[in-house]
Length: 106
Image (cartoon, rainbow, N blue to C red):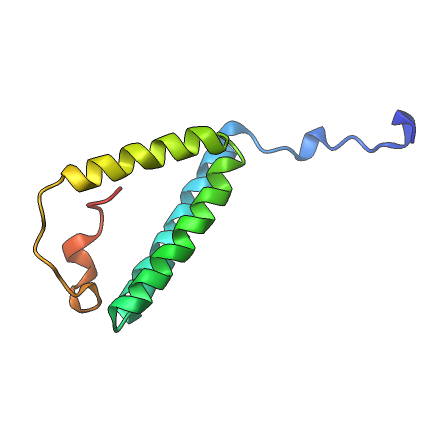
Protein backbone atom coordinates (compact mmCIF):
# COMPACT_ATOMS: atom_id res chain seq x y z
CA UNK A 1 0.00 0.00 0.00
CA UNK A 2 1.45 3.34 -0.99
CA UNK A 3 1.33 6.54 1.03
CA UNK A 4 -0.51 8.39 -1.72
CA UNK A 5 -3.65 6.31 -1.03
CA UNK A 6 -3.53 6.81 2.74
CA UNK A 7 -5.93 9.53 3.91
CA UNK A 8 -4.57 12.32 6.10
CA UNK A 9 -6.40 12.13 9.44
CA UNK A 10 -4.20 14.55 11.39
CA UNK A 11 -6.99 17.16 11.37
CA UNK A 12 -9.19 14.71 13.35
CA UNK A 13 -6.78 14.39 16.28
CA UNK A 14 -7.84 15.93 19.57
CA UNK A 15 -5.79 18.61 21.26
CA UNK A 16 -4.28 17.89 24.68
CA UNK A 17 -6.98 20.00 26.31
CA UNK A 18 -9.73 18.10 24.51
CA UNK A 19 -8.20 14.76 25.53
CA UNK A 20 -8.06 15.88 29.18
CA UNK A 21 -11.67 17.10 29.04
CA UNK A 22 -12.87 13.80 27.57
CA UNK A 23 -10.87 11.85 30.15
CA UNK A 24 -12.34 13.99 32.94
CA UNK A 25 -15.90 13.32 31.74
CA UNK A 26 -15.24 9.59 31.35
CA UNK A 27 -13.84 9.39 34.89
CA UNK A 28 -16.95 11.08 36.25
CA UNK A 29 -19.14 8.64 34.32
CA UNK A 30 -17.15 5.72 35.73
CA UNK A 31 -17.34 7.21 39.23
CA UNK A 32 -21.12 7.58 38.95
CA UNK A 33 -21.44 3.98 37.73
CA UNK A 34 -19.23 2.52 40.48
CA UNK A 35 -20.97 4.62 43.15
CA UNK A 36 -24.35 3.35 42.01
CA UNK A 37 -23.14 -0.25 41.86
CA UNK A 38 -21.77 0.00 45.41
CA UNK A 39 -25.16 1.18 46.59
CA UNK A 40 -26.75 -1.94 45.02
CA UNK A 41 -24.29 -4.37 46.63
CA UNK A 42 -26.34 -6.27 49.19
CA UNK A 43 -23.64 -8.56 50.50
CA UNK A 44 -19.89 -8.76 50.76
CA UNK A 45 -19.55 -11.15 47.81
CA UNK A 46 -21.14 -8.63 45.43
CA UNK A 47 -18.73 -5.96 46.59
CA UNK A 48 -15.74 -8.31 46.21
CA UNK A 49 -16.89 -9.22 42.69
CA UNK A 50 -17.21 -5.54 41.73
CA UNK A 51 -13.76 -4.80 43.17
CA UNK A 52 -12.26 -7.74 41.29
CA UNK A 53 -13.68 -6.54 37.97
CA UNK A 54 -12.35 -3.03 38.60
CA UNK A 55 -8.88 -4.37 39.48
CA UNK A 56 -8.70 -6.41 36.28
CA UNK A 57 -9.91 -3.48 34.16
CA UNK A 58 -7.43 -1.06 35.72
CA UNK A 59 -4.58 -3.59 35.31
CA UNK A 60 -5.38 -3.95 31.62
CA UNK A 61 -5.44 -0.18 31.13
CA UNK A 62 -2.28 0.53 33.13
CA UNK A 63 -0.15 -2.30 31.74
CA UNK A 64 -0.86 -1.05 28.24
CA UNK A 65 0.91 2.18 29.22
CA UNK A 66 3.46 1.50 31.98
CA UNK A 67 4.32 -2.16 31.54
CA UNK A 68 3.63 -5.13 33.76
CA UNK A 69 6.75 -4.82 35.91
CA UNK A 70 6.07 -1.19 36.88
CA UNK A 71 2.43 -2.02 37.53
CA UNK A 72 3.38 -5.00 39.73
CA UNK A 73 5.81 -2.86 41.75
CA UNK A 74 3.15 -0.20 42.34
CA UNK A 75 0.67 -2.87 43.47
CA UNK A 76 3.23 -4.27 45.91
CA UNK A 77 3.77 -0.79 47.37
CA UNK A 78 0.02 -0.22 47.55
CA UNK A 79 -0.38 -3.52 49.43
CA UNK A 80 2.31 -2.50 51.92
CA UNK A 81 0.65 0.89 52.41
CA UNK A 82 -2.77 -0.68 52.99
CA UNK A 83 -1.52 -3.26 55.45
CA UNK A 84 0.28 -0.52 57.42
CA UNK A 85 -2.92 1.53 57.79
CA UNK A 86 -4.73 1.29 61.12
CA UNK A 87 -7.83 -0.90 61.05
CA UNK A 88 -10.96 1.06 60.28
CA UNK A 89 -14.34 0.27 61.67
CA UNK A 90 -16.11 -2.21 59.40
CA UNK A 91 -19.06 -0.73 57.52
CA UNK A 92 -21.68 -2.12 55.21
CA UNK A 93 -20.99 0.23 52.32
CA UNK A 94 -24.29 -0.62 50.65
CA UNK A 95 -26.06 1.12 53.54
CA UNK A 96 -23.80 4.17 53.75
CA UNK A 97 -24.91 7.33 51.92
CA UNK A 98 -22.61 8.29 49.04
CA UNK A 99 -21.86 11.69 50.54
CA UNK A 100 -20.16 10.05 53.54
CA UNK A 101 -17.38 8.37 51.57
CA UNK A 102 -17.32 10.00 48.13
CA UNK A 103 -14.03 11.72 47.44
CA UNK A 104 -11.99 10.07 50.18
CA UNK A 105 -10.19 7.68 47.85
CA UNK A 106 -9.30 9.97 44.93
